[in-house]
Length: 64
Image (cartoon, rainbow, N blue to C red; front, top):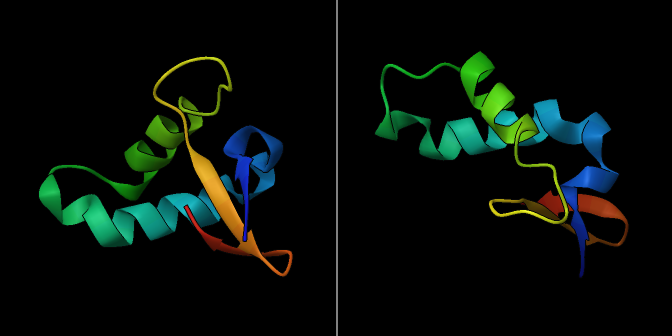
């Protein structure tokens, strides 16, 4: 398994946001997938917290 910064995979943010929202979106019923995606885009910096990492297994996006 290889961990990489989401900053290196900006083309996958929409997919990752859908995964996040499907798993955690129920915690804020007033939230939307669109708002969640915007929030995720704000966590793509390598040098600041919060940030996001993604996991690859055999070069396939596996987790975030």
